[in-house]
Length: 528
Image (tube, rainbow, N blue to C red; front, top):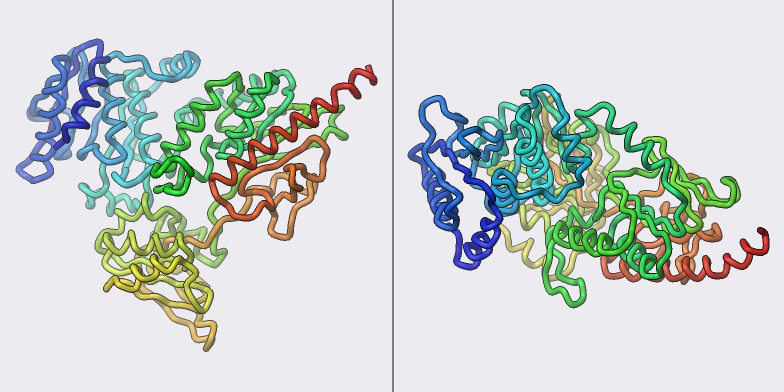
């Protein structure tokens, strides 16, 4: 099951287990149960602190294959229904370590908050092994289960339990249920989950943020541009903060990255983790899971720029770097919002496995759309790709691959006009042929939207100059229309939205802002 290299790595990790743990498996006669049994045998062979046995009647979980993690003869509340390899292998390793007494890498305050939760919380998460967003949710809920006896969590591979997926009408992953009821969909950080079940968490966090001293340089946004800006600012020895809705930004939704110079291949979650680790290595105040709601320039806030957060807290700084990034562009047609996560999806890598053997559409004929269609064609029964232009815009090599696939139809000059459904899930879409104005109905089960990005700049209002596309206008130094406020990355008018360009943008803007601060200091002293 595990190759020699992976066994060597796993053996090293398992040496950190401090107390014995037992894996209790529910198995049947199927091939997947035999695979799980092989995996458990591999794990047990690598550590004398780990053992496994078959579940007895009425023991632990009725799903097969599945296994629970026990400690001191007691169920930790952590259960995997399926075989946690792929993106979930790290979740398995961390679950074993945390159940075995290895301390998690979270702050004491968060651990205290988890331990202080009262009541019974029975979580279930449906994931797919190809989803890069699922592990964060699985790992957070596993950690909570390991630290609080009132919390349990079962991570379920939807591909192995299609009847449950169908019964619960799960059309996007990760999908989380709490005590049998829908709780959340999509990527969630540990702190976000705690905030949803701990009613006082948000107000405590807001008060702590509001009490912070002003920064010399505050970065808003934690993608490649924001991370680079924070590193360059901190290296100057000035008081630096970075506030981000989710550290990593759009990178977290990127599967394969092969054009970051000097790094031949990586994926989004790995790069995001590396960015955060690099920033954390410096004296930077990292404020994750914080959404900016309003900018108040220095002229209207007593000499300091102010950023008002969604929770009401206000962060103040002498200079700002705006790097809010971008998000997937929507079709803005009837039915899209109604059926979001119920057939309308934006991440083919995450949600594609849920449509195995079904018919889907991909909207968009650029590189992202064609790559999505190629990936999905290996999973689903049929793909219809719809492009607005009269020709595809993807690279020629991708187009050749696409047109070689027997289960793909390509429609050009097609304007998607409506998403149709039965009230619970998508049943089809309507598009108009732009050459003949004739409307066509395509019966299908899922729609993957891949039509580019839109900048996250609505919260800025009219405080800084924006282009007609909503991008922040910047000069060659990264300066905006407001002195002391700079911008970088995909939300700006800088052409070519690439990770390596965003990183350079962030570094340049931080250096420009530092130069601004140096020139500002004599003015402040004179005014005093």
